[in-house]
Image 1: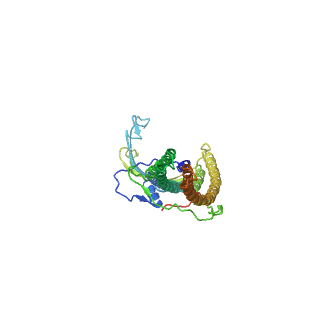
Image 2 (image 1 turned 120 degrees about the vertical axis):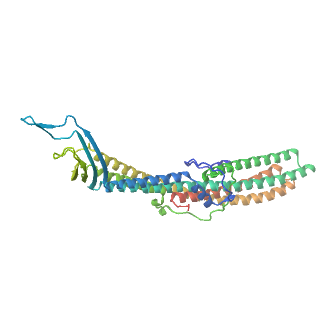
Image 3 (image 1 turned 180 degrees about the vertical axis):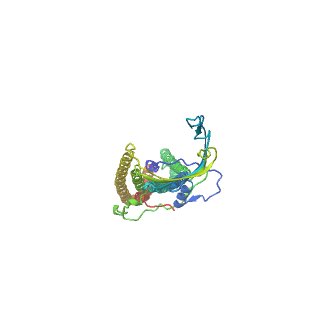
Amino acid sequence: MIKNVLLITVGLLLMAVPCTYGQSATPDSLTLQEAIHNVLENQPGLNEIQDQVKAAQARVRQAHVNNYPKAAAIVDYSHINPVPSVSFANGGSFTIAPYNNYNFNVAVNQTLYDFGRTNADIALAKSQVLTAKDQANVVKWTLSYYTVQVFYGILFLHHGIKVENEQISTLQQDLELVKKRQESGAATNYDLLTTKVQIATEKNRKVDLENTQEKQLITLRKLMGWDQSRPVTVKGSLAADTTNGIWETSNLDMNMRPDYQILKDKENIYKKQYDLARTVELPSLNAEGVAGFKDGYPSDLNKLFGNILLGVNLRVPIFSGYISRYKQQEAKAQIQLVKDKKQKLARNVKSEVAQAQSDFEAARKKLKTANLQIEQANEQIKLARIRYENGVITNQDLLDSETKLAQARLQRLNYIYQMKLSRYNLQKALGEKIWK
């Protein structure tokens, strides 16, 4: 049974969650929903994702930059010596530029049309925002179901410890009975020693269960970000699932899976990158306006005159080293890669659903056998006690029958626990949301 108990720990990738100190007193017991709420409320990974969302939203705003004009104030000074001049045959000369050149102006540039480049960039940035938001659901989905496994592991161990306590109590009664029979000469010192050894064995099993339970409680505190000295108990039912079967694969909707949604988001991003790559070598039409003051005019070289410049320019790329072609090829390859991953995930999910169904049905059938074994063990104990009191069987026979009952009860708990996990494993495979 201890090996079965140790299977509770699930090998999921878990973010490091720091413990917090000095928190106010809280209820000493948690329901499953309360545990999940605390885990998600105190998960720094979710805060990190929110920061990623903000960064992605900032990229959307950056992508809108080309829709706005760009203005700049320019102050330009240069000194020329010697200055250019024109000499005449009569010995005279004419200077055509001043020694000190000044230019003060404000330049404004506005993209009039870029053949969809800006819109493609905006669409790409928006798709990245959506991906960042969906990533939060992946974290919540993963942590919620991990919390389920830890929670029911603690609950299972709690009931297992109760069974061990009852077994130890029964053995203590057997010990008193052996002592009385020893006083009357009907039992030996070996019988007394055998009973004590059996009690010690059961106590060791209880210690193992308590140790495993404490490890699970440590994990739960870590998930919730609680101080490890803070007492935690869980409350919930570990009753048998009376359902004859669980959902069929036909109910599977891959769009419900958060990890599948992330793949769809990535596929959309690469499609937007492909659209953007197609615009790299397209023309762009821009308007430009400059207004200010400068010197160097022939009428008076050193006087500052107001001036204005208006223009339109069309920029047509001729050759850019095939960059657009290569970017499109990369985006198409990434799109196909994501499609392959989607197909692989869909195949794996169908396998997860079938596995959960198989585990559930196997545990349900075994539970019926365990119930019969418990019924049989109870009857066997009744007969064994009568026979032992009449001296028909040995003390060891009585201990063996009581041990079989305890093992059957623990096995029954294990099957119920496996049915619970199988049910939640199926819900996870189907992408069901269990957090609020």
